[in-house]
Amino acid sequence: MSQIIDGKAVSAEVRKRVAHQTKKLKEKGIIPGLAVIIVGDDPASQVYVRNKEKACAEVGFYSEKFALPANTTQEELNCLVKELNGREEINGILCQLPLPSHLDDKEVINLIDPVKDVDAFHPVNVGAIMIGDYHFLPCTPAGVMELIHATGVEIEGKKAVVVGRSNIVGKPMAMLLLHANATVEITHSKTKNLSDITKEADILVAAIGKAKFITADMVKEGAVVIDVGMNRDENAKLCGDVDFESVKDKCSYITPVPGGVGPMTISMLMENTLTAAKLQNGIKD
Image 1 (cartoon, helix red, strand yellow):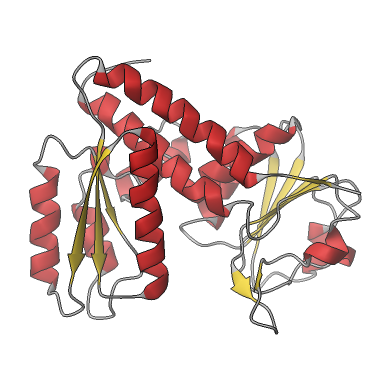
Image 2: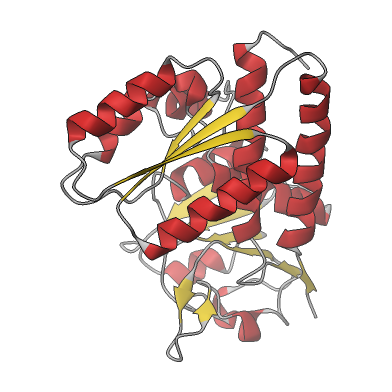
């Protein structure tokens, strides 16, 4: 029987750490500030933004939400980002994705000042992650690393397999595992004999976006299994990319959905915003 990795508990520890450091910054007259931009009324995005506002309040940040109508033009959105780049009290800028189809998310991401890019999506920050000399990490992969560290399992020398190659999760996830001295293989929808590869993984990260795709016959005995997926099953019940019920008795550690990776993403956003505030104020740990 595997041990469940409690994302809520690990997330709470991260936020406690951030809150403690924020208190020390406030003693120097510095309050970390996060600006969140949301365009349109996508229900899931609305929930994410509310959760980010709550997290800011919890750790002691200043936050501003910019809720723009769905018919906002590219020029209007770009002007807002430029304005926020110039505001000293705003240390982090986050534009909630996806944007309405008429807007270019790459253009917006490229406009955000790299030192305020707390999602770590700007090409400058992506390049820094590639060479291992970074200030910010994409929030979900960073959260996954925290969860793996929480198990006490040594990453160095292990075989790690990432299922999924997105720019937001799969690719940076592979780089972080590589920086931790794992031997990493990235797999995806075109990979042949996928189950033969996943069965060799000491650490398996599923981020493919297909409900219950990873089954017990694809998992090595005693593996650490991290489920990044957020899907709905045939009964419209929330589930991950891993068939939790069949896999949980085969692995050593596993994340549930919900309650695993999900809570970590916003907590790592808080950590990135704290880092941004320190950088912009010349404070070194």
